[in-house]
Amino acid sequence: MQIYFSPEFFKEDAQVLNIVTHHNEPVGYLAFLMDGKEKIYVYGVLENEGVTEDFKDLVKPYMQGLMKINPDLDVYSYLTVGGKKVDLDMTEKNR
Picture (cartoon, rainbow, N blue to C red):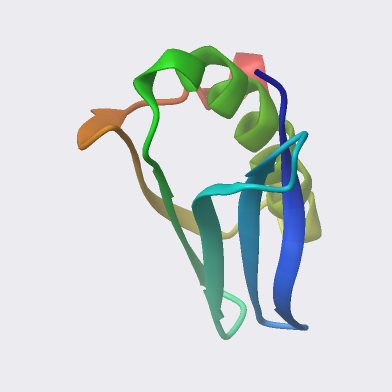
């Protein structure tokens, strides 16, 4: 199943993106908030475990783009798929 971002709320320092299927059915969300110029908080929930890798493939480049805004930002994230925490490999060599 293909999943995509569908913008719900957009401001310079905050976004909420729905995650939808190719049939435009909502299956989760990704939200980020920036705390000034020092911290960024990223929260994401996806309900279907069957698309965990697709979720990672969708979110990782997005987070990499956010980190390019300011490489000195501290990024705090919590992502879940089907209630289980998902870790992205966001080490310096994989950015």
